[in-house]
Length: 274
Image 1 (cartoon, one colour):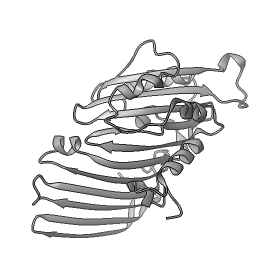
Image 2: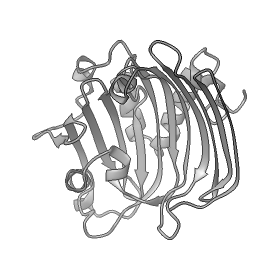
Image 3: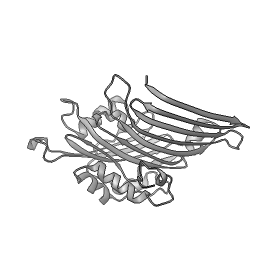
Image 4: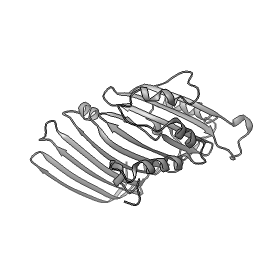
């Protein structure tokens, strides 16, 4: 259940072409708009989706974190599998403060998410951590997606940095996260940690890879980057060691996107000066 106010919907359908614009002046405390274009007369049918949302909260009555983001995606196909396999474009996501939920952050089942959380942040089962921020962007090319600048998250106890790759044609997922306890937060010596976890498998049932140790970014590009460029290991290490990895990743995203011809360069959320 969601709370929507100040809703505006405009659409046209002519000769197999659908143009739909939806604007919500208040969606769970934030704002959102969607532009959807479908050409069913093309061979194969084409689809284009552009969306912006700002500080959209969770389900009313449940504590969540505000979400801000941009979607600029295109595809074509005669069914959902073909549309997923032909996906192209970019997406940006920023999360604000709220309860830390690894399952929601990393597209995992509750069991795998719980084990991942306990590995990355020892003692997490004793008190629920709070998310202070999370930040990422994704590139999609021919159904393959990657977070080229990494995926950063910050709780009161730890900095986390990772990378996610997904192949929508084969429905395979790989992700890795490294965590490091934050300095100056009153942690006892025994609570200082630096951990790594890797998860790989089909989208419906990814599993933790056993005995993953240390930053293993060096072998990452061989998995399925489909020619998509990714930042180097040194950039991710600096973000992990930064006082706030979210700010570090945002700075890297802005420097590589703004002023270029990439789709997200026209998004004010990513490049405020446009």
